[in-house]
Image (cartoon, rainbow, N blue to C red; front, side, top):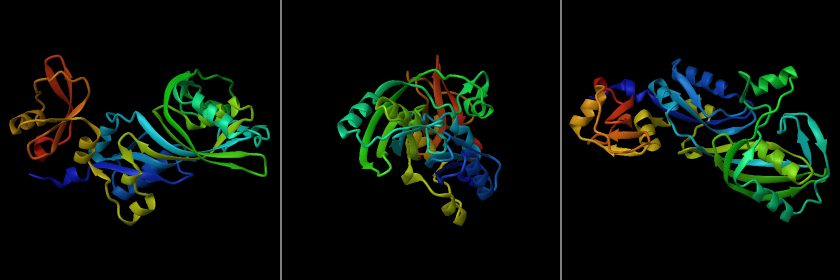
Length: 300
């Protein structure tokens, strides 16, 4: 039997406005959906706009299981100045006329930053150094270095190039990359490689894993009518590989028992004969056990 409570659980894909923190979005969603059970996955900087995945009610448990390993962005990189934050919100620490840098040089620099690369994150990142966030240490004036980390930039495309009277070259770009890639670091490293400095002036996230701007709603739209982008059932079926199970198996797994394994390594969602997502399952040894029940027996 259907229960209204499960329909209140799901994901809201928010198209975040600029000058808001991810926590600001969570606070707004708590008010709009009248619940404290709201969380987010994949933090966005205040300067950035675009896709932020927010979980409501029981779907907050889903957030830590989502495989949000790929991300997509549009951005604007300004060549000709470096900043202490690698974006427009920082103080300019270097300045050079970049108008002599040709398209071929830019293309070569972009190519060097495409593929599997080692990247040093921006110091204003959320990476922890001795238990403290790097961005917090920066504000104290502490001196520290961050180690380079392996990331994958699967696509780095220049869409438009604009040369300004002030000596800057602005590049509108699209980037597809692995989780943990800093677009502001790409801007810094491209400017550094070209000898003129660089920083990020605009950033918009267009996709996180399977969630795109097509799923997204602005907070203004949600204020007019708070509505989930995806129910918890829809989110599970979109985000994980499927395994079809019988009605008896669905009853069993929804009550905390387990299924016979199939030899699969990834977390997957089991689907009953009516097409409902019942649970997220992971196989260990001779058991395929639930790591999260999507639809408990009491809601079936």
